[in-house]
Image 1: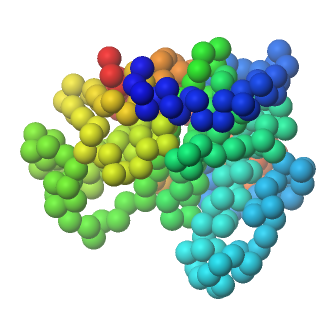
Image 2: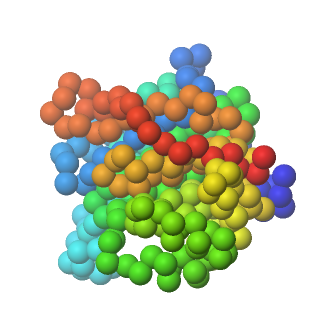
Length: 273
């Protein structure tokens, strides 16, 4: 276990006494992933008000950059992420009261006050995705989604954080865009599991032909990468927590709203094994 990983688990140690919030015997030991789009209708107002932080009650016009479209977009992404996390807690049988006890580590990563639950959030454009893991051990999860921006010079971008062997691998790919986002997203996902920023991208070693990842900035685990959704998706979880993943997408107008999804294709990586 790296010093960074130990430090992350020390953050907010006082709050670990809230482990009982994990819920009743109905809780499900699994990993849950949900996504949606801020252009979709979703009943945010159905979340009990005591479970919604004040900043999410505010309109985007009340934020610091009045009328700025990016500020409004971020605000709506945060609201949707909170809504999806609330719904996933219900899927997992977790006491949703945890939502009122989310705290932030020194690096700014949001966490629940429980050493049996972890979550992570990502957004790109109007899309939002959330991963939630419930485990008998200490879970650590990370997620990254990216909307493709095809006008970029992907070869030059990769050179900033990847070795020449990986650059040569990308040059051989029939789909350079998908290849680049695979290199990017998997790095983001493992680093986000520990609240580490993209400044450490170059310290994640990606071996695409072996489907392996090595880095000092996360524990051993598994990673999935998929390009079948409206965005590129990478999921990381410590240990074998990706052995049982339940996928959901928000579908307004349906009876449940949060509908099960079967991910048909994903590249599977081992991390630090």
